[in-house]
Image 1 (cartoon, one colour):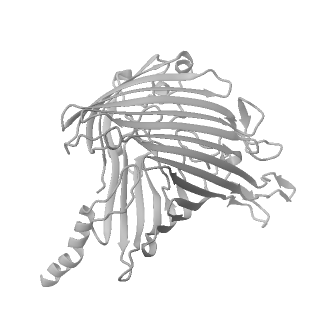
Image 2 (cartoon, helix red, strand yellow):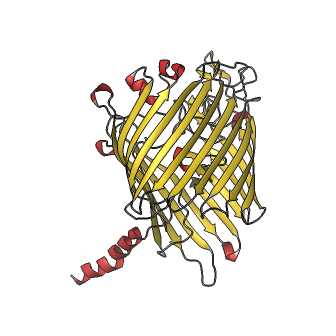
Image 3 (spheres, one colour):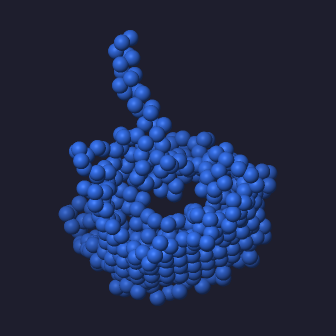
Length: 480
């Protein structure tokens, strides 16, 4: 019994205490203030049930346009869970360096079923990912200097109501150095997904005499610098250089020629961001304006993702490169705390992208798959949050999205959402969590969106002018 009590005091109690010592998480976790000397834990998650009045009460589908992700409103997002532990290390006496290793584990269903009705062995069941696993040393020797290495969600601002990390989402595996207002990093991007086509991250290597899939890695080198104009205004500058190595594998073995000869390719990104905190409004009010231009293989992502290494469009199949591809991304995001009764949060997102092929419509990739080579999308949205009292808030949202793929007509959607919320913490703050909310959304589609089934909802129900969504949802995050 004595040894059992000793084991309990020595190991079990500290572990339980560490788990209960929750650290910072909003859109991403930053462990700058910790309550436990050894371990801290953060979490983000959402869970709920939803349905529609189509097909006898089927499970709900997202109303947003195709290839837009949560841009256009995120109240219909599916179940998702993140657990993020960090392990803290104490430097020698007299050293103020903050040292920690952080991991992040995420779980979600790859099908449209609820997370509670799926397992990893289910058809379209649970998927597990480790988007973060890195080590960082901050405030090295008391200086404003940090060094990190590993896989990291290395990103800055996001439009929360559209779940869109814009401007500088450099998430990936690499290393970086930060000194005062300047940040340098290198991200190494490689994928074993053999269905990837733009550009292919793999090639068939047969120079050794034995055919095998080899990775074609992309290297992203980036620099950022902040310029503080005054206490309210900050300008940030961004520059990136992308390079993919030569994947020359064209050879002939047994009279069978394999033509997968991809020469080296590159791209550049330039960006600028202006952030202002409004001193004539309640604390937390701001406006964030960003503009980013990418070229070559760095011409940006799609599907609601803004990573510049997610190349868009088709290559020039003559030069076997993305030379001439380009993308312009503009985002304005603001939040106004007018009083302890009302907050307004809004955004505008505009993206115009083109691949390297001559076509303004569809063109073939390296492996012969046809993709759109040009697209323009535009979205504007607002969230009105009324604090009825400490515990009950009312969300009202309106979003307008439109997208033009190639030379197709414009598809558009106008969506209204209403969500009464119970906030058990009793905080009159737009960032207060957890939320328990009832969500009701209705969307109107134009003719082209309706006829081409240009929405996950329409793909399930068929051609409709109007789409509906109802759900009871929970969302949380935990931080100090």
